[in-house]
Image (cartoon, rainbow, N blue to C red; front, side, top):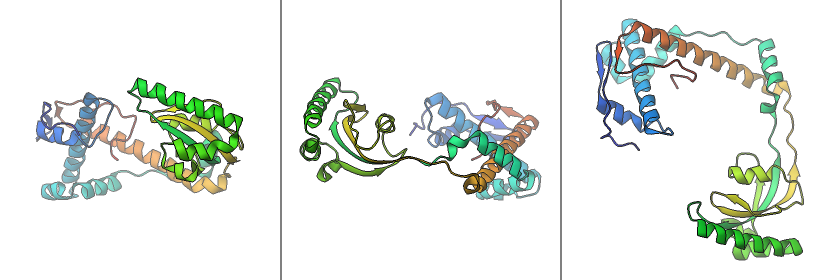
Length: 265
C-alpha cells in the first residue's frame, strides 16, 4: 500500500477540486510497476469518475447529492443511456475465430510428480546447495526410477512429499512459469533431465500420463466470441466518450492521455 503522505498536487475538473489527499488515498487501489505509474492511474480514475458524475448531473440523471452517494450506480446509468454498440454479426465472429484459433484450444493435461528442494532466489549459497542436492537425487533416480517416490518422501520440501511427490492432474496456468515451460515439453513416462530452477528452488519433474489439448469447434465458443467482441466495442466507445467529455471540460493539474485500455472498469 502506498503511503498517504506522498506529496501529489491536486487537480481541478471544472469547478470541482480533487485534493492531494484524495489522490494519495486512491493510489492503493492501482498497483503498478512504479509509484509514478500508480499515481497516474489513481489521478486518471478520479478525473474520469468526476467527468462522468458531472455529466450525469448536467443531463438530469441525478442530483449532486445522489452523484456523491451512489456514484457507481449513477455512472452505470449514464453509460447505459449514452453508449450503445451493435451486436457482432456471425461473419465477424467467425472471422475472429479463424484468426485466433490458438485461443480456443483446450489445455493439455498432465499427471505429475515432483521433488522440490527449497531455496529463496536472493540467497545464492542456498540456491547452489539446493541444486547440488537435486542433481544428486536425480542421478540416483536415473539409475533406479523406482526410487522417485521414496526420495520424494524423504527429501522433498513440498507438501506432496507425503504422496511420494504426486501433484495429481495439472493443466496450463497451475504451476510456476519456469516449471510449466519444462512441463509442456514433456510427455508420459518422461522425467526432467536436469534440475528445474524456479523462484522457490529446484525441482525434479516426472510425468506419468499426458493428454493432448484439442481444438474447440466454433459452435462451442461462438457465444463467448460475440460477448467478447461486443465488450471490446463497448470499452472503445466508453473511452471515446470520456475523451469527448475531457475535451469539453476545463481540467488543470492533469492531462488525460489517449486510452489504449478501458478508462472505466
